[in-house]
Image (spheres, rainbow, N blue to C red):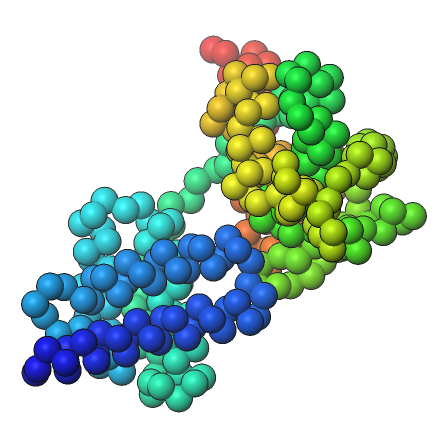
Length: 309
């Protein structure tokens, strides 16, 4: 094949990826999803575009080649969670191409998803979590936006939101009279969750000092009055976790885990927790029962006389 032919096929795969990412933007996919899918699909394109070799067009890629690509990810030392995410991105790409009539079938569906290890989430105790949130409320660190930071923690722990969901909340998503928040979760699915009196008080204080650029509807703002990104929110959580608890490994999802685990420990129904978290499958929520059982066994080992013998 000529150099022009190689370039044409390479750009056909690149063009397919660009078209898919553009479609995601039109569907109002979250910035987090767009960033991850763009990164994963760029790496996918690079794998199938080695120097001096012809890159296959999308319709020429086979399940065998995808399995070889997957094996290459293992050889690079990537963990199973990352590999599953990259495969999901490629499956979504081919699903889009089938829908657009560019390929006949989604060959990525023929590739088995690697099994993820069953890990019990590391969850801070209720005492540790409350000490962290109370430490933020104490405002001892001369941060420029203490009201915003406190609201961020109150909503993360009080509503169990993902950090991308919280950064996507707009003013019109708040029902202050009923204390409800409309949340846009994965797949743009919407749900409503209640927030408690402490979060309501933090919200009132924050809204009194919120300084937004004209037309900005985001609830949480950065230092220039624009929407606070999920990356910026992660940095805020990491700062306070390091300063208050001395644990910089604590992240926003730790507070989501704490929300679910503490609700379950206090007798909340598992299906209610599923709805509050926005999980599509109950099995995803059930991992928190493992956390509770682990804690229960730890209490038994410490307290029961037979366990100490």
